[in-house]
Image (tube, rainbow, N blue to C red; front, side, top):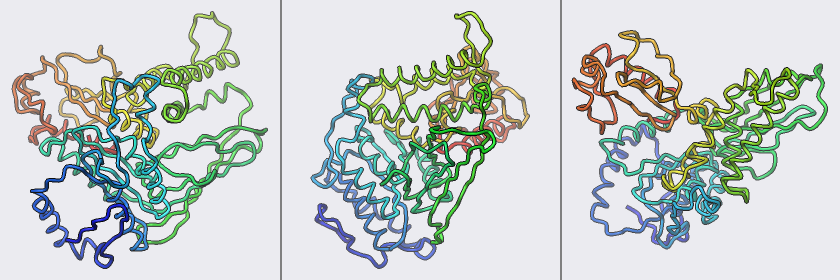
Length: 479
């Protein structure tokens, strides 16, 4: 074991053999994993270092002269005297007030600068956090956000409960297709132009989106504004070009071209509006305004409500037939806009108050920024599935309206939003169904501490586990 004693001037003491092929060195890697717990079993060190560890990993990737990804596993607030040292500034009472920005923005520029260095080297950082106390996700999460990485959080980690979720998240992260050292540019035809971007990325100029890594779970939302005359004959055109390095080391260019029709009537515009995409964009704008604007959460909420009201008022004025002023007129494509706006403004990412931890709030905000359209919709309006209906049919059950009136005491329901998954069991469920799925005849005896269902070979058990597995496959994270 080689030790670098100076954490202020990091370097990699060993270049040759530091990065190895998994196939060639699998036995050595397995041996190392077994030795690590024993090597540090008796350590008396209570202060941790994070910034220097990431810098060491970055230097190793640079020395290998290739792009790559760092998987960082961290547990406590880095308070040791080293680069990236942080103070405990936790004060959950500020959440939901105009002062919440002081604990939801980075307390030091170190991790933002480190993230920029990672982007320049094509090194993505994924953070896996296992903490029992405040760890300042708002600050350390910047290195993952700017490098195109992801933050995974396992509060109060227990191996028997959370171990499966962590291993599945790690397996997916390691195995999913990925592109490294990517640069994305969006071009448009005359009359429209890209003005803003939302997601996990870094921009050193006003045109190029830089990502140390990019995979199919990431989403970059682009805001395009109309600033000139458009004609229905010419249409509008958008081109997205992505220059990246493949896992085989090849430099490639992928280009997507999109041709859109142009309309001159407001009614046509509203008829073709995509509500899900609109909510994705509005929510990310709200999160950014929370941490970057001078206004507090009240101003952000009022701004979101005002924009939604103006959209509907414009439709009423220009597209709808005259009606009484008290009647709510909604375009067909935006009938659910009031519902989604209400859900967005009540979500943890936007309205999380002192009832949640500061790290949970920061984590929700970071997660929302990288969500794609389908994930955003599920996050704001969770999917409610009745598992007790359908008999032995293997068909996926239709989702119910997410309201308490739809939940019956004789039912079993699955509720998921892409981040969390809950199984609700009524007290009057058929004993036969309970026995087939939970191996218990009454609901009161079902073990609520279990993180997974028993693998029983009954048709009901196989059907329920199949539905859960399908939901997990659709989502970016294991729940």
